[in-house]
Image 1 (cartoon, helix red, strand yellow):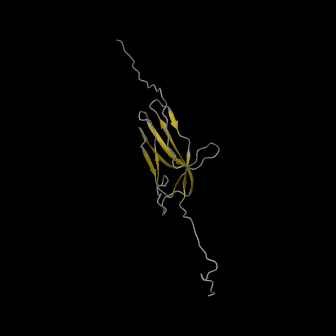
Image 2 (cartoon, rainbow, N blue to C red):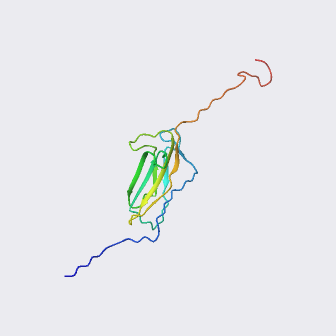
Image 3 (cartoon, one colour):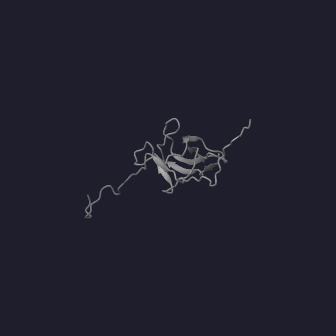
Length: 148
């Protein structure tokens, strides 16, 4: 009896590259605020022929000494990531996050086990409306110079 062992392997000639554009230069939004930017969307730019077995899009606090920050929100799945991911400013327990700077990143894994990731980039949460005040001095005046 002759047996043949047939084995499969995946050869990747081109690495997968991931990009999340930052246009505007700074991502700022105001979840649960009275402004018009209550959510923020991240658009994924992947080559049309990209082979991805799994992906993770993380939002974290700032890390310290090369250690990753605390995980705030995770989007993940198998296959290609969605073209757009929208964050409403809620954390993993569905609570609105505090004002501050957070960092988003995307990592991809190919069927051969290779990984690609983007450098964490900032997104700013700002729910505090600006305060304004006005004053007039003197409080009473006459436009024609007459005294009141």
